[in-house]
Image (cartoon, rainbow, N blue to C red):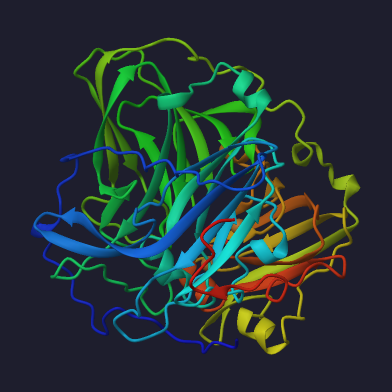
Length: 502
Ligand code: C2O
Ligand code: CU
Ligand code: CU
């Protein structure tokens, strides 16, 4: 089970395709990812799915096919929608080939945003080998939110997610459904990421000695810089930054603001109106854009103003365009001034905390570490080493400290939602005033976050979501209580063939 620490590269001296061969912005139509198709199963209160991880030929560069990896052959994968209180079981089958450097193609699937049991959380070392399968059970008791599922395998997460193993997952709940927010086709996933290509049109992986991968092509739901036809009304966009490393700073070229209604853990207490905001890898922000004042024929461009320590290219300053084509259907076209009704995490107060911990994200001896420790140390300890061991239900404050001016780190804590208390002693930014599970720890920033550790016992990962950092090797774990299910041994993957039913 102990996998070697390896530095993966698609090419040792990467040569990029000529920029003249890259697609031009706003030449492709916008698409939403397909909806996942349920299959039959025994429990009437559970939705069952089967996903095959397989190669797929994507059409990104005109005239060249790009090999990617998709859940059910789709990049991004199919969107799973579920009502709070229903369970889901997703059978994941790894039918991927060896990659072309001959490394075994193992996977692990994490549903990011779900409080799943340890053995279903995509624990990095709980791997699905080639020609193996595993059923992931998801509880969906949490409030409405935008989640995403993506690969999480030990030391190869960046490669696997970059190859396309990422998709959206939405939990709805009765309270959120009762609000007059945009719904149905006006509730739109935007999975945004970057990529770079070699002269044959294949994905190039170059993370600059593990500092980060910064591609020159921006993909939205798998397509480069698409154009979406919109009606003159409000839309809810669920923006998920699925990049390996890149962060964005959104702005509309019209100068109009975004109304942020939800963060990683669901609805904010109150909507926040912002002209621009920064968005690190793996964060989700649900924003309302109102096209009502535009006459048909008007184009609005979603721009990216970028942030320090990204590498920007000619066309990374734009992301997609909206062409207003018609007057709008005006039902469910409002943003109430109060959104979440009673969100436990947003009600947490520092006085409830029983422990304050410091977590330093830093580079040491050319490795990315958390307080000097790595996932390799966790492996070497037989998965015993933990950063923290809160009791079930304990409230703790963690100070996430980045002393470097040269890097930003989107820090993710599994299992819990947290509230951002402060950044460098000042209140959180407007767009972060909602429940979170990833926070942007920018250059020379200290971010204080508070969470209640639970509701499950067991071991869960903490890591930087710059996947090049995570893989090398900025990931540790915490354990809630003692005696929780073992993430590796409780329900390991099994060799194919999988059973024909559930
Ligand atoms: Cu989005 Cu530990 O992952
Ligand atoms: Cu997660
Ligand atoms: Cu990092």
